Length: 380
Image 1 (cartoon, rainbow, N blue to C red):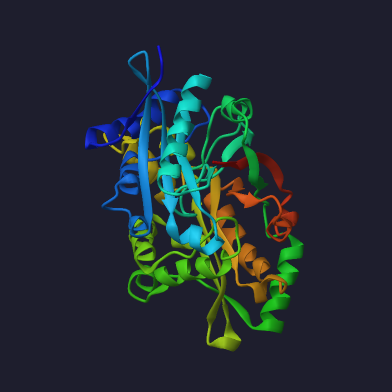
Image 2 (image 1 turned 135 degrees about the horizontal axis):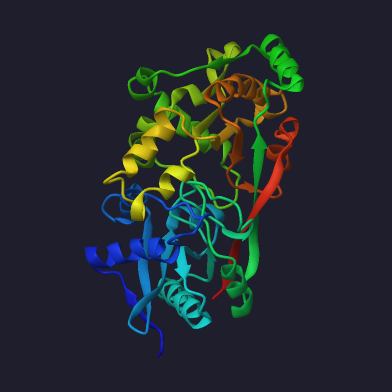
C-alpha cells in the first residue's frame, strides 16, 4: 500500500505526532524520551515564542492504516536572514525502517519549502539551538541524554540511500570520567587566573535568578558566546523569558557556576549550566508522562542526586576570556560538587567537530569521544 502523508491540523493529530516517538522506541535501552508536556509546548504554535519569527507544518506518514513516520518542516526567518540562506529545516524526524516512508516524509518537507520560496533542506534542526539537533551517526549503543536526539542506526542509511544529501555540519560528544579531585592542571591554572586577571567564581541563589536578573544574564551570555556557531541566531527577549521560566526552576544551582571579572565590576566572563543526568529517570516516565509515577524518578535525580551522571548542558565564555584559562575556574568549582553528589561521569552536549578550542578544554578529564551526529543539506 502506498504511503499517505497527512498534515497535522488538530490537537488530536499533534498528540499522535508526539506519541509516535514513544511507540517507535518502546523498550529501547538507549533512547531518552522527552516529556510529553515539553514536546507539546515546543510544537504548539501559540505557546512557543519561536513562532514570532518561525513558520512550520507537521506531517504524519501512514502505511497500511498505521502511523509509520513523522516530520516537522520549519522555516526560521531570523536564521535565514542572519546566515543569508533560504533553508527549510526538518526536525522531529522519525520513521520505520521503510525507504518509501522516509522518502515521502522528506518529499513533504521539500514541497513545503518550495511553496515558501526555500532553496534547500537542512537538518535535523529545531526552532532554535535550544532544541535537539543532529542525526546520530555513531554511538547507537550509548545512552542518550535529555538534550540530544537518539535515533536508530538505519536513519543515516536511509539518508545515503535516498541520495542528494550532503554533510552540512558534524557534531561530537564526549564522555568524561569524574576524577576524585580537581586535576592539578586545573587547580594551578585556576589559582593563577584568579590572581592575574581578578576572575572569580560566583554562585547564584534563587533570588539572584528570579529577582536579580541573573536568569536572563545566563541566556544573554549564551547569545554572546554562541553567536558564530553553526545555525545559531541570538535568542529574543521573549524566548529568554520563556526559557528562564521553563528550565531554571528545576536547575540545581550548586551545579551552575558563573565566572565574573572583578576588574569590570563583576561583569560575566562565562558560565556553566550542568544538571544531574535525567536519562534513566525519563526512561521511567511512561510515554513521556510525569504521572502516575514518573515525577518521582525525575525528582529523585534532580533533588536527591540519585544518578551517577551529569549533563554539561551549556558551557560558554566570552572570546576575550577563552585563552586566559577561565574554564579552569569553572571545573575547579564544579568537580568537588560532583564528587560530593556521588557523580561518576559527565557528558558534553553537541560540539562542532571543528571547534577544537572547546574540545581542548576537556583534556585533563580523559575525554572519550563516544557519539557523533550530523546535520544534512539537500538543494531543492
